Length: 331
Ligand SMILES: NC(=O)c1ccc[n+]([C@@H]2O[C@H](COP(=O)([O-])OP(=O)(O)OC[C@H]3O[C@@H](n4cnc5c(N)ncnc54)[C@H](O)[C@@H]3O)[C@@H](O)[C@H]2O)c1
Image (tube, rainbow, N blue to C red; front, side, top):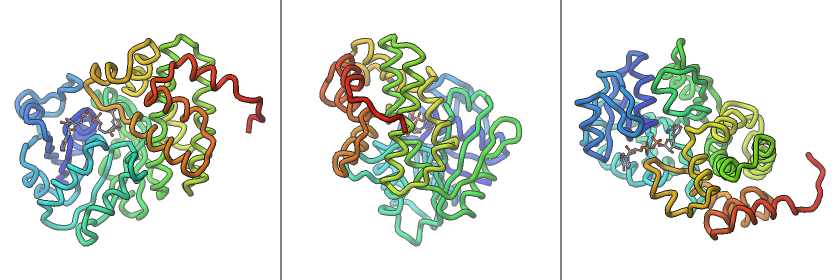
């Protein structure tokens, strides 16, 4: 099949490599002409400095990319999603199946990515929507390393179709799900705990503390899911505990790296300035904190991380605040 990909960064090109290995023809659009040139001439992913299959082509013309296929994979940071989607809608030549690989929530509206698509794309042009999520760092996928991931859609047929596109028997195993809400929520929320895990590592607090964070983070996610009306079963899947583990323990995680730097005493602006790639957890933390306040949900880790990020609370004090809470039952 032909597949259009919007966003030729780390994740867009790692997924394009999977599609190419599955014998699909891929055309990538990126807003940065330097990225387009490197894909077409050197066949590399600039952000990761990794080689990609030579048959992956790129263009700076979004209309050409959109005309290429009725299946459009989005892999741009959520911060620029509305811009990229508006540019896409302006050149749509018919109904499309949209697959989204970005992980985040819009802080101002608390909309999930699927809801932004529903809000912006005219209903007759939105053939379907699938979210792709799970424990999957681009650094490993682009090298063909073992990865398990989930395709979720309200419409099972669309999830199964996307599963078929991406599934690769050698290294990329794809599951399907109809819990779109839970899958999108898990992919977004876990980034907050990755920041916290980086802070713990930056402070040298040790592995016990990290395991505790992952466990208590999962409890906060469960409270969130229950209030939000998502299926808590997804917490036990790849897009819940699976993604939480990889993002809280892997040095590939940008959110973990950002937390680590802040834990080492760098401030937020300095940290973001030093990172070449997107740190979705910051916007998601803002969104989750505001949601929790609005509905009076007690989510202590999210609250402390929010205060570290947005009110320059000393991570040491955030740590003390968590420790000095009254004694509780575990579950
Ligand atoms: N990198 C990973 O391992 C990974 C894994 C899973 C999910 N994700 C998610 O995928 C999303 C993208 O992350 P990434 O790591 O690829 O980021 P990245 O920073 O590596 O790449 C983003 C790309 O988007 C392009 N871009 C920016 N604005 C654009 C626009 N308006 N139109 C088209 N292209 C535009 C940039 O030029 C850049 O090449 C994030 O939500 C991230 O959380 C990333």
